[in-house]
Image (cartoon, rainbow, N blue to C red; front, top):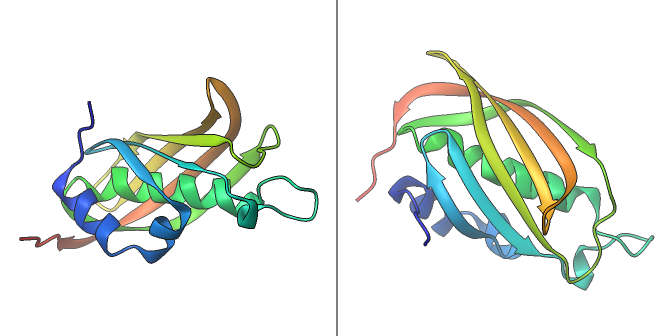
Length: 137
């Protein structure tokens, strides 16, 4: 069953890049988000595997959804990605973001990327909470 936080729904509606990726939100709550997409041929590099930016972008979107679901606007200020395995065309990739630490101004998140149950990437990101609350209808 999909549980999508209203802020995440609003963000996704206005996020052209996540729409281009074909992002589907499976779960979102304050401090947690799970999303997925399918790798299309136009997402591959010269080696015929998913461009590294695809996994990175999926992880970044998952991080954004997890952080912003707290209700306060948050922007990433530092991110790092480790690629564990190649991702191929038609693979369904899934990003699971989990908040590891949160203070008044900063949040630290870990995002695991999977194809099926196989880990293919690990992303760490830090966000800054901007002190402005989301106002959605």
